[in-house]
Image 1 (spheres, rainbow, N blue to C red):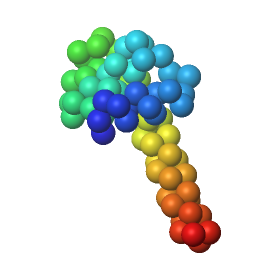
Image 2: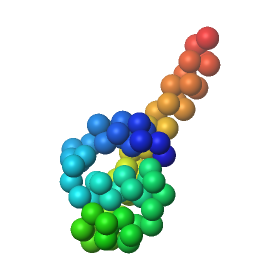
Image 3: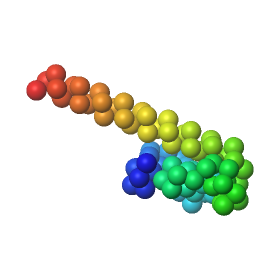
Image 4: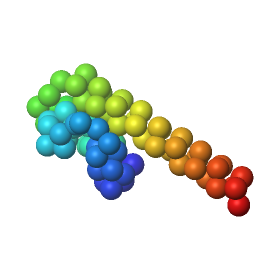
Length: 78
């Protein structure tokens, strides 16, 4: 996931971009860091980072489903 995608997903949540667990999730999703390493780097528990990662992944999946439905609709009405 790119930085812009991560930021866009965050905009759809009430998560604070400056919260340590969110910063840890950014390290996981954008930089490819392992969850426990990201958690240690930002000073939170691995479960806290994992929770945010799951939220980000869930919202990204929903956004992708919406875009797929939009493409399907546009193909039917074209």
